[in-house]
Length: 238
Image (cartoon, rainbow, N blue to C red; front, side, top):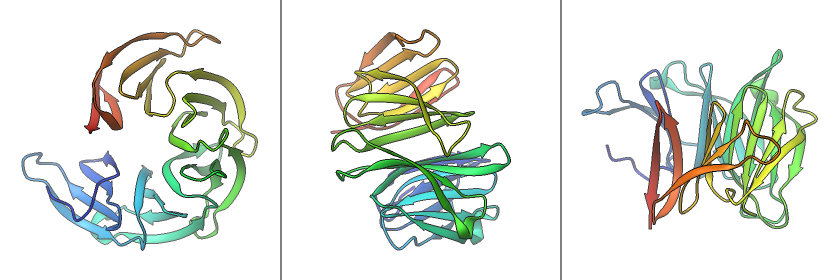
């Protein structure tokens, strides 16, 4: 299916693909019939949407210098619930419930003051930043994933950092692995998958070494990575 701008991020929930479509905003596409996907809704985010996460009927969109929050329980009638201004360009976002509250973790990139930001989004119209972890050097952060209360951030310095996020107001660094950062990542079980000129697989169960178990050469730039049912799906380009 053709969308009106570059698709920078996508997530599928209950046969609806929610896509961050650059300057066109957030799109909802019914993919229940894979051979006949259909646009069922969209919302103009007034900027360039570059990342999207959906949790419990709510979509979180990284949109230039903002985190935008939407009710997507009815994809045909998307409603904006709130907006939070980020200090740097928001590139990717992940969201989930920790304790009794909801949090969004935003990865910023392309500026010297880029950071990983933890935002309390329990009240979407009154989101509050609770923690900031500056990116190393002038790197910025490429991707972020949340598994339970463990947060993974891939930065442009070539390192994936692992944080204990059980208290989002105090993100504690518990591990890191060089040689796999600067990439899009996914985490399934005790494996971290990283795509940077090729697929690399890291064993998270062996600490602190986090050995690389193997990889596969791709020969193209990687733009996203999802692992499901023991298969790695890689978006590539040149």
